[in-house]
Image (cartoon, rainbow, N blue to C red; front, side, top):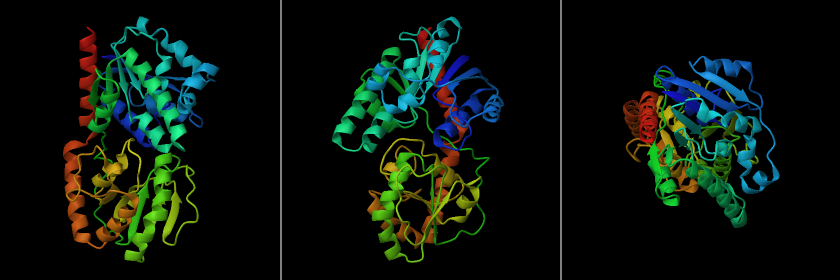
Length: 383
């Protein structure tokens, strides 16, 4: 198939969930399809990043950002402006004349760059549901209502162009169908590179917890900040001597305050593998759903036990008690982590079961096959 992939930003380097997902799926599918990636240039990206993407076996066009007009600023969410590109609109105006079998819109944000009624079959890929995320992060009810209205308007723009949408979890698919009855919403799960993430065979530090994730991603930073206030005191009281290493790129999107004793802000590292091999467990203090959850899959592939909120692990086919330990809220997460660290044999059993489940269900090859099937169904339906 000849597929035009439209992304809001260059999906490289693969150091954040969305970029990892997009680049991994493209790597799997490029040998079997003729792929052209059109995206918007991000600050800091240059020739090296573009060359790496071309090395996946696809054609690449990178276009400049530009300012939004007044009407778009009023009606669209702020995130849409981060990827706004008049050049992208001009580029996509001619897509129907190019003979592509399919257009894959990789994220909702650039939907207005597409023609209003494209004749080429279109699939919209939601890495997360932006509406839910924006509402959860809004400061107060009024801002939440405004955020919801702006994202729902953008969703309606997308549903007017195509009924074919994809999410990463069944839960997100159900939410999208409930808002827009009649949509054809499929699920393309996340994955992990099992050849790149090897299970650790070394000795783990029984008192070391790892928090892993991009700190400039607001849900990660806010969840961590709240955990340090309400969850860490319970953990430290039950298990003195426990340490928490916070590993992730970027400045925190929420103030962490004065770090309590035992908590170290490591920041960005060249490779998280040594931390995945050394820690006793991965801590996932998320209160907001959505996003890739790739860090849980990477931890499971590395044989690292996981202690998470239920929201943080939503949508993964990993069961509480069998593959990981789940808490209802951040306060309970502190007590649960202390209890889990005190039972290393149970931790090891869950980690082994999680590794086996991930090997069976979460390779990128399987995720790519799900996306390929969705592409073929969309193209066939249009014919």
